[in-house]
Image (tube, rainbow, N blue to C red; front, side, top):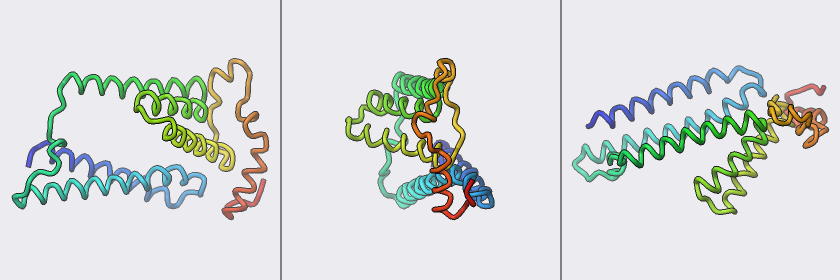
Amino acid sequence: MSRKVLFDIAFTLAITALVGAAVFEARGWEIKARLFPWAIGIPLLALLLVQLALRYRSLVTVGAGGTVAHQEAEHEVPPEIFRRRAYSMIGWLVAFVAFIFVLGFPIGGTLASLIYFRYTSREGWRMTAYMVLGTFAFFWIMAFPLTTPFNEGYFFEFIGFKPFEWLGYQQNMLSTAFEELLGIGGGR
């Protein structure tokens, strides 16, 4: 067993423990506070456990004298491709932060997702539309029914425009209805 495989397993176990601790810690929080850690943490925990199971299966197969089913995992990426991919990831990370800083989380995150899915990931328009609508729906649910405070973005602040008031003026009514639906609030 190579050091790379051992490092992969150890790193995945460490991240699994960290995410598991975050999900466990959030269990006693109010529903609004625990929604975000659970919405991200539970699917991430499931994916990490799948990753561990797949890695274990490949180790058992190799250990039993079988062939390596995942040779591409052990295959080294040429340095110029690795460098290009690393620069692309760092560039997109900076771009997402810039979009969110300038346009706010819901609008900037949605717009950056549109550009990323369509032009960098080279997804078709249909898949891009599904992903962007899902992103927008997530932000809309977080912003309005759950009243998660999002920064409106420095561009909108500079020009004096309030996009959240324009998108959903009846925020309090939606929040109260959503809380009553879930049985978590006594209204406003």
